[in-house]
Structure formats: C-alpha cells, structure tokens
Image (tube, rainbow, N blue to C red):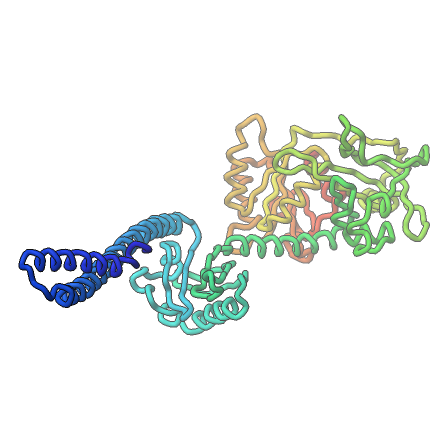
Length: 486
C-alpha cells in the first residue's frame, strides 16, 4: 500500500523529467532562443500527465488488491460453507439414526427440523410439517400444551424436562420431553429443540407394580402370620399388621429400622439371641431356619413365644438380597391344632432349637388362581416346606399342565383350585375334567366366599378338602399335608 500511495508523485516527477528533457533537446536542435519560456509548458504537462497516470495506476492496484482479498474471502467462505454442509449432513444422519423423536423450531415456533421418529409420532410426513406450527400439525389442545412448553423455554432461556400423557395419532402416549433453547454467540435465541422419550410401557409397568403392591399389602394385612422382609443391611423393608400385633412395634416406625431393634428372637434354652446372619468368606450371609420356637421381647417389654421360619431372598442372578421371616404365636398354633383334633390327646410339643419339617421335594403342588399375587404368595408359603410349586392362571391351563405331568416321573401330587375365575374356566369345571383324566387326583377347593354352597359341601363336587382365602401359612401347609396323606 505504501508503494501505491506514492505512485501519483512518482509519475509526476517522471513526466516532468521526460518531457522537460525532450523539450530541451528539441529546442537545442532547432536553435530557438526562447527556450526557457518554452520549457514551462512541457514541464506542466509532464507533471499533470504523470500525476493522473500515477493516480489511475494506484486505483488499478487498489482494485486488484481488493479483488484478491475478495477472492481469498470467498475461498474461506466456501470452505466454511462446505464444512457447515458436511456438519449439517452428519447431524441430519445422526437425527435420523436416533431412536427418539427429535424436532427443532424457530423463534416463531415453526418447524425447522424433524426426524423420522417424530414423523411417526405425529402420524404425518416432514413435507407436511416443514415450516408449520404445532397448531397446523396437532389438535388444538395438544398444540396449546406444546406451545406453552416452548414459551417456557424461550422465556427462561433454559432447558426444561416435562412428563406428560397425550393422545396422538399413534395412540395415547406417555412422553418425557426434554426441551432446550438454541442461542447464538450474541446471546440471541433463534430456535427451540425437543427430544421425546416414549415412557408408555414404563408407566404401565409402574401402574401394574403399584397395583400388585396394593394387592400384596391387602394380603399381608389379612394373613394370620407376622411377615418381615429385610435387605442385606438388615434394614426392615416390609412389616405387616400381624408382625405389628405380635411385636407391639408400630409398622411405620419399624420400616427402615434395623431388624434387631424391632425383632430380636432368643433361644428358649440358652436365652441367647438367635443369629440371622453368619460370616461367610468375609461377607455376611443370611441363615435359613425351618419352624423354630423362639422367644421375642415386645416393645412393651412382654415376652412372646413364637414359631418362626426364615427364607433367604435372592434376585434373578442368584445374589442374596435379604431374608424373609414368617412367625406366629406358638400358643395360637396349639389352640388351632386342638380345634382341628378335639378328640386327640395333644401333648405339649418339646421344641428344640431347630425342628426340621418333613421336606417333600418329590411332592409337586399346583395352584390354579387368576390372581398372580395369590399364586406367588401361596408358592412362597409352600416353598418354605420344600414343596415344588406349579402355577396355572385358569382351569384350561390347569388341565393342560396336569395332563402333561400325569404320565411322567414327576406327576402333580395335589391341586389347590380357585373356585371362580372371571372370563375363563373355573375350578369346578376344571376339577370334573381332571378327575376324568385321573380319578385319584387330589384336589382342594379355595375361595374367599366361605358361604358358597360348593365350599360347604365340597366333597359332593369331587374335592377332598377346602381352604378359605386369605391363606394362613400354617393352615395352608396343614391342609396340603392332609391332602397328600388322603
């Protein structure tokens, strides 16, 4: 630029010298006597001509340099455009590959981007979504909901996570939507993005789990035995109403407490605490007990003699997760035995530390009930005695299961048959068909309606025993053992 700036001056001097010399030579050759006056004109012409020539050259150089800079800038811009094109292409491919619905709207709430999963969610195509607002894509109530969420993001200029259940063209969906602002270098918000996660199945599973938990709570409240469940840290996770009655500890206070603070069994002979855990390879491992008579101290300081059994709980990987304790009053058990055997001389049993029950690993018991929780609870009760449990949800499945086992080495020894199954074959019809297959089948009827005529006259319908719901552990085990001995 410095050379270009001096070009007019340089060319003025050059013109001055060249024309001045030429004029001087010309005058000398012609011999003119007024040479000094005549030199002024060529000098002025040389100065002016050189100046304007230099000025034009300067402008030419400046334009040429500007063009070179523009060309270089265009090259840089082209590289940036190509890089952005590649980035946009990669982002588009990534969006299309994501298993989640993704969308992007401008500051006027018009769609800029949407992947295939979002098209599926809306039940339309990108061509019909592009450049439109939610009010042109969704029904008005849903569009209002989405607009409210977008406005919240714009006003706060921060991401929000929203859980919602909305009716969409693909059906009613529960969604967890993450909406976030897109801000440029100047801090101006220019777009709102959204990523949806379909949590419909998760919510259904949660609802089902809550329903099962409610049913389990009802069963635990009605069951005649105390039930305590702990984790591996010996903290109480479950504490039913009967356990509250026998220990005199409030259920709400017992949950989360250490087991020994609410239930501490003592050996009747030595008076020492009966351990629930033992050291195993440097780790604590639960100890399983069969029916064992122990003494517990209640919260009010009373001594209570109970018969307890414990079962180690494991997850699906076989890892120990805690223990299950089932216990009942020893006095009530003896009273129940007297009621069922009024003519028999019942001597007080001499309990040792551990009384092993008759384990009947070869005895396979089937329970037919439409309630999965009842099947599971019953199976848990009988599993403590070593029985192998099979489950059927209705009469048809019970018949198929019994027939498939009938001629094998491991036939079903006894059946607990629910009397009523809504919408499917119940216990009465299933019993008739099973007795046709095997007249010696041992079947007991189970029902929560004790005044049902079939329950009152069960033997007339082919049943060998009956049991009322909800099941009491000892009563269930005793009835099953009587059924097996029939």
